[in-house]
Length: 548
Image (cartoon, rainbow, N blue to C red; front, side, top):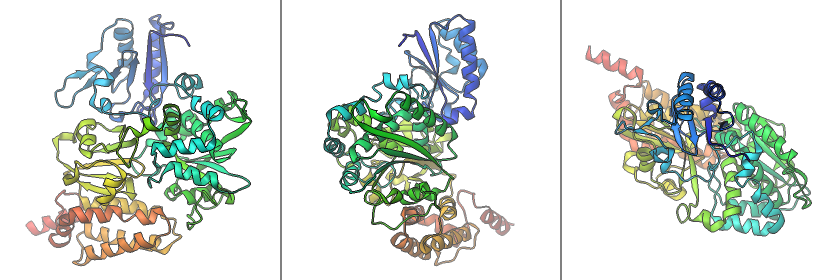
């Protein structure tokens, strides 16, 4: 490949696309041409670089200089002053939130320097529409290694030894899931990727497919070889058009290069991948509902057992993992189980990708070792709370997760630690709230979402979530009753114990954790008709009437 004096990486994740990154790209391309730099400077449209609140942004390599919040006029200045003139454009550099000092290089910015990237190793650094750039960064070497020098049993052992657990929420051992699917008997077997990411504020899987789709394709082919499957499906929601476009292009390129199709690497192994687009039903993130949707039927969960590894898609054994889980596989195969297990904690190995959002200064996509504390995520990587307000709580795992109060800021983010306090890691959504958040209204928001997304198949979820939502609405409107908290707890526990699928079983988590840690706010709403955050309008009006 040609050696360039500079590579201009224009972040073109969905967030930056919506904020006008392609106008930035066009301005830089035009400027490079006008200054006679076409033979020296390469302009690349990448996936998400990570820092969403700074977009549109540009990274210039090999210097590692990051420019933020750009306009087309700014882009022209970058070409003239930096690329042509050799000087930094200081007014466009990132500003340290504490000192206000401009910081030029990516590795010096707190948001980036505390991360450890395995899943996101290529995102923001390569052109996702160019397979050559993926191959240049060890792409498809793991697949070649597996097909030419490893037995399926050896692959399973390597994944088990790595300690990788499913990143879709449940945290089940990935290696054991692959082992069960390999051992299952069936005339056909399938490999499925769950890209139906529906949590509010979550965009981890979308960003991987937009920025590094070949990592998932390669991992699915490895999985196919391991369990004895020749067909894979990626189930992705229709609301991700950019991810779908780039994934479709990547699949075509992989077929052209013979990384998919018949007789891959001349080994006699056949494997192909197809895309199935979902209609946006949150419940289809549950694996059995997803499989039902691929089959062309209404996306509703099935009772388990049998589990998909035994009887899944079209009644045949099926391996199903989410995007982030698959994206770890090539790195594990190439660098080894012990390398991967060196990150994280004793029982939660590796790294985890989070979508950091809410009342935090630095929002975006972050990848950190398992066991990183919530405090470090919020105040080191996130830069602290906006407008110098106080941290109030963090919601992990989206509508299925739990609310973590300030007293647990130093908790390690791993499967076991969060379970002990009633929360979950989940798929990686992480919403930070400040003192202006009404915690009762916060719980109502998540329950409203879950209730509307319930498929309605089982009564505990269909009816129970509706009753919980009615009580929460009543409390936020100043019509709460003395026994409402006890009633909520009883309803929540009954639904957790009796709902058919993960959606219903985890739906009460936000309510139970907010009651556990913020009971005083519930009591203020019920007894004092007071919302300390001033969010619940009916209560504000009642207070005004009393004063007058």
